[in-house]
Length: 282
Image 1 (tube, rainbow, N blue to C red):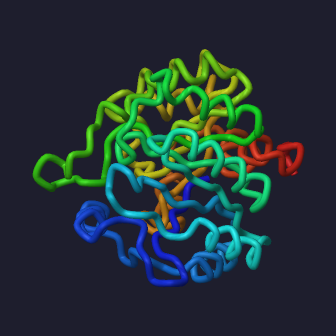
Image 2 (cartoon, rainbow, N blue to C red):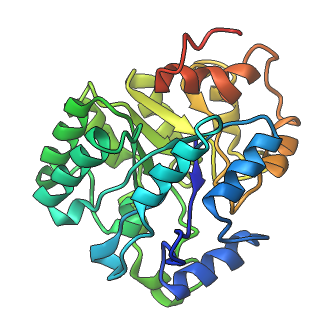
């Protein structure tokens, strides 16, 4: 449910060089900018599928994202393994709504990705509610980064990136006020994991993806909840290319999870969320 495409066919990267280098060092990434077709080959060889996206933070970063249209077209070439999500910059106001509708209606994206800290906005603020209303009407899910940020890690002032915008409690208001919008809280939400667990338990339209951390570092409360009350709300994700699926799955195998829970997390919950099938045990 969580794979980044960091470069487009024109060689344009998703982030300014300083952020690209800092995040590579933070995650110790082996290959930071594989092409979309290379990503497809990786997942095809593993008999897996992936949701792919970038983040549009053009206002905050003064840097346009890599082409989302390229991502959609590349996913169409590799539609056996890739599912494209779009992204819009909430700070662009009504333009973000127009673009979101165009990406959904004309390009066929299957959801949207937001990174409140990187994009520099508080998703609970009323000025962004027209965007959430539009996404609810479109009927596609939205993934929001939550918790600790690898972006800007180790840089002076964290490159101006504010962690508080990634507190999952800010999404509680969004999920409450837009019950038809499926909200995915990306990553273990350290240092706010208990808050994330509570929100996902309380609201049927809230999910948690497990990307961005090796499972061996998951908070114990998240593992416990994933094995019980959140077993139908938790989604497999890696944050590839920052974490490879092989490494993630290797650590996931060591978690103390029930046998019947593992296939839900790895496949069936995502199928149900994305409308790809019944999400049953097939």
